[in-house]
Length: 289
Length: 318
Image (cartoon, rainbow over all chains, first blue to last red):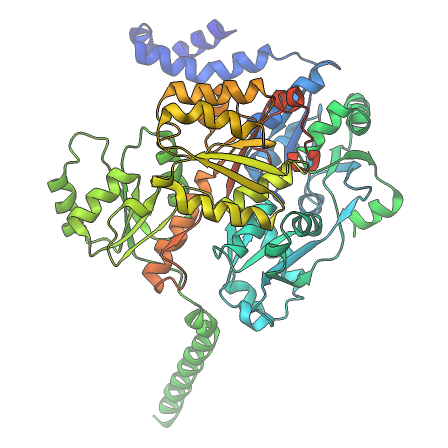
């Protein structure tokens, strides 16, 4: 197949024949065609879980991929592919039929008008499928007016954090919200510690993380004041393309059972989840609001 | 004539009206705090072939709104005089120094400039100018102890080997910080690397885990490091280390500062300096952590791991 491509190239530009043994030509040719050759080497029937989350600043992609791939390989040709870039992830959603997508509900709600996806499963942590986000500030801050220009540590993307903050603060003072500076940190616990150590004035985290923090370091917890709480949102969901039900049912079954298996649960814990379950009607309604 | 004059007045009034409207529309923008838009930052790297320096640099450039230009001291041409000439010619608002070599050079040739330092071990040992700011390379002991408590709820005593000459103050603080998270931190001071084995044996009989810190007497050479890990392993005690480099020795947990976050912090400091002087301290602690856990060792030693904490792990060894 590679040879045919080369011949076509020479047909288009006969002068290239003169340079066909030049190292630079060989390098450029390999760079251009290797991805096609490699992608052709994948099993034709492999099914992939594509993952992206703006809610957490997950930067352990290689570990996540390795752990999920090892776990999934026992069931067949299944792969896990995390993404750090939102646009790349969205491109894959649009063109992948043999795949399922693990994504945040906020992201799904942004995408559902553009892409025909069907949500199937939802994450569960501590027997709950929903979570809240909390804005915690240094105790000396007593009023939203003090928040102008402050630095907020968050493990979510700036876009996600700002959108949720607008809802949490009910757009009370758009100038205050616009003046806030989102400071990206790797995890919720970093955001909470950043306030205690003065690198940030506020922390935007999940309520679960805040409760854990209270148990781990009560002194630091007591330096914080919770100034706003979000409404409930669902944990990340698993969705599939509308017309791909038959092709991906097997991977959805595997994912649904992951929480029952200690090895599967370990992988889900890396995403902050205990298990995945089918979305109930109430949860679907919540998701499609 | 009168009609023309009337038309002209109407036009002028309209222009005035538009101008007022524009001013009102722009008013929120004019009153917004300035976060360093504009301004120039010289990024002075000790050596861009060092991955952690390059990571900090990339993260800084991604986060800053200031315009930047770079000098890599790893390149042969970048000697003192050329760097000094470049600073005088381009007159940057801030010099962001990555690594100790870059900082020492900037301090030597431009110590009155605004300098932001990161990625240098133990910043307290450097001469500091009045306009020097920075991000420390080490996580504060309380942050580390909080993470130990988070990951290992059943670990109650942690032992540290240290030398009084280099780490007495750090040790006193760690003992104090341990109380905040219900961990008893026990230290044994040593004067010479040959004392490591005997003192470690005593410590191992008293504690649940060993906490390795960057002490030049304790970690004097490869042999003492190997001794520490071998003895701890023999006693089924985990070693918590401060750098991913200890993975090969069998560290159970490695906790270090997250370098991209350090780059972002440095960018924030530089912008605050360009806009207004930073209100806080001159040096910040790192705000992000990188965590590696060795699940194989955790199983081997039979330590209880808080599995909920796995969402905070960067890498797993198993």
